[in-house]
Image (cartoon, rainbow, N blue to C red; front, side, top):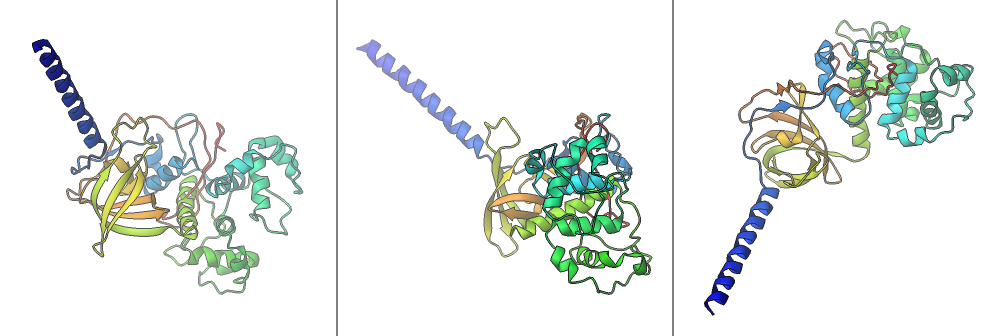
Length: 361
């Protein structure tokens, strides 16, 4: 009988210990961050990203969306001019049409004068060009692709407007009067596109009152432009902006990947409590750099872009400690692909998208 009691007590002790362990794990899985420790910029960075510091957040955000990548040597070459074929590929990717582009046959017919040049020199891009053509990114009167031609500001403005499905709106604005000093340098058939691009905040003029329509776009500028275009795409998809104070943020303790969704709870300016899903590796803009969402903390002031109850974009406006992000010295080299472009304002406040291979395409 004594042995039975001992065995029973021993079993009960084991069960109690196990129960407490499970409770501890469960508690950890919903643990809320209350500390705003030093924010570490722990994303992959290109070796030369400091060549265009103003576009760092844009470049990294587009990189995280696999819209643009870098060269095999770990560089992005942000100040390198972008070509038309690179810009087309980037736009197609940002539109979410990459799978469609990759499914196109290598024998697909393109009725452009220089279609052979594209097939011979840029076979990797043919499916993207076919997809771009089918989705209205070319004008009806265009008979050449001119893949190697540097993408100008006016050309990229037209491309972005078409990518947003605003071609008809642009056509209705072809007689609009633009106030730039060099407005007469903007082709008559591009006036409407420039007008809409300006209205949507995709591009703007320079402080001296010019637009510089024929100025080439750099890879950093294109990253900024397409980042901005991404905001317009989200707005078209009925995404909403929500600002407020973080009241809780947690991620599953058992997660083995940054792709896992956690939860963020915020108190809005109207004192409403809102809870949304958020990925641990979502890039959050902070002091013109980026940190991962799992570094957000209670009392942070944030601006979230929410689509279907999921946070798809975020900005850290201010934190309790107001510390700036520290660059992680162990950041890895970037992937061995590339494609970038640039177009935009003197201050580079645009958004971007890229596509690339080992040759920087």
